Image (tube, rainbow, N blue to C red; front, top):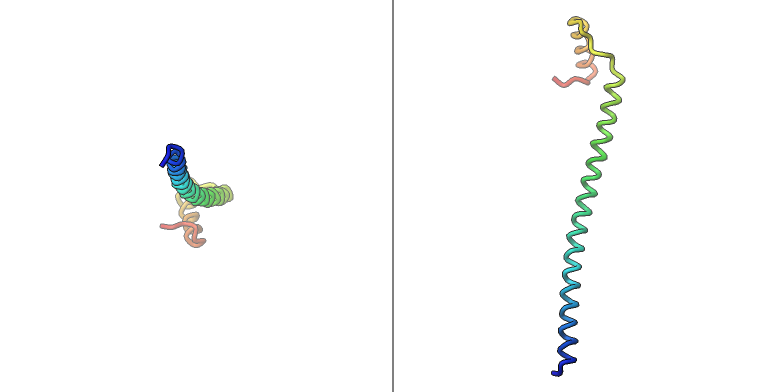
Length: 85
């Protein structure tokens, strides 16, 4: 085998190694991207829940400082299913 043929085989081998490494890294990046998309969906869900909870809180009457009125308010929440005790 002459030097030229050996150089071609060596170059082909190196090219194969580079290609394999590039594919391995592409798979790692693809996995990270899929995980990031799942995280983004979870964050979007949490954000929507937070906005809804904030809107519900804004629409509520202020909490009474009077014990009797406060008991009435707690009863209203229990009946309405808004309070989990």
